[in-house]
Image 1 (cartoon, rainbow, N blue to C red):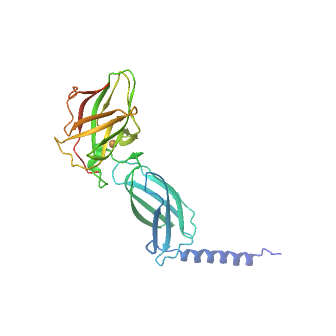
Image 2: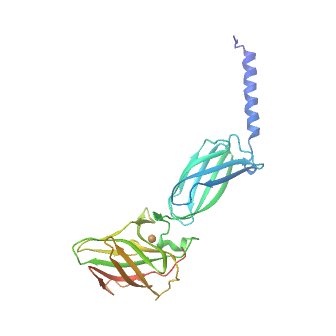
Image 3: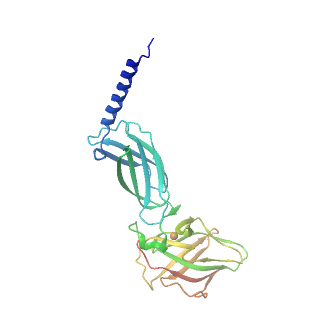
Length: 279
Ligand SMILES: [Cu+2]
C-alpha cells in the first residue's frame, strides 16, 4: 500500500511536471509543419476533406491539436463555410464539408499547435456545378475573378393566353453550353442565385424574367455575345412543345411590351440578353 508522505508527493509532482515539459518540447514550430488536403468530391454538395499534418520529413504529427477550416469563394458576398475537427488518426483529420456553390474555392486550414503557434495553409479547388446552384450573381460580375466560361442572361415577359398552366422544363441555344432557369434572391444585401427546375406560366397569367429576378442563365458561351448580336434560343414545355425565339443582345428595353411573338398559347415580349461577361 502506498503511503502518501510529503516526499513521495513532491517527487510525483516533479515527474509530472517534467513529463509535461518534455511533451511541450516535442511540439513543432509552425514553420516545421506541413499540411496536405485532399477532397472526395469536386461537385457542388457534400464532400469529405482529408487533411494530413506532418513534419518536414513526412512523419505524421502525433497530437496535431485542433483544426479549423474556412471555405470561401473568389467572389464577394458568399457566406463562408466553416468546419472544425479535433481528432486525428495518425495525423489525418477527416472532416465533412459542403461545397455550397460551383466556382473557384479557397479552403484555409488552420491548425493550432499551441496557444501561440498556428499553421495556416490555403488550398484552391474548382467546384463544378451539377445544376443545383451556381455561384454567379450577375449583378456583381465585376467582382468575379476567374471561372470556367463566359456567361450571359436572357430576359423576357411571357404571357399565357390559354387557361392551362404551361410548364417550361428546359432551354437550349447554340451560343451556350447550357442554359438554366435561375432566380436571384437577395438576403441581407447579398445576391445569390438558385436553380429552378422549371418555369410555370400560369393559365391566363404571365411571368416576367428580369435582372435581379428570374432569368435564363446562359453558361459557358460558345459565342462572344456583344451588343446587337442575335441568337436563337429554344424553350421546351413539359408537354413537349418547342418554342423557338430570337433574342438580341441589348440594353434593357423600355417597359412597354415590344417585339411580341405568339407561339401557340404563349406570347413572348421584351426579349433581350446582356452582353457576355467573364464567368
Ligand atoms: Cu443566374
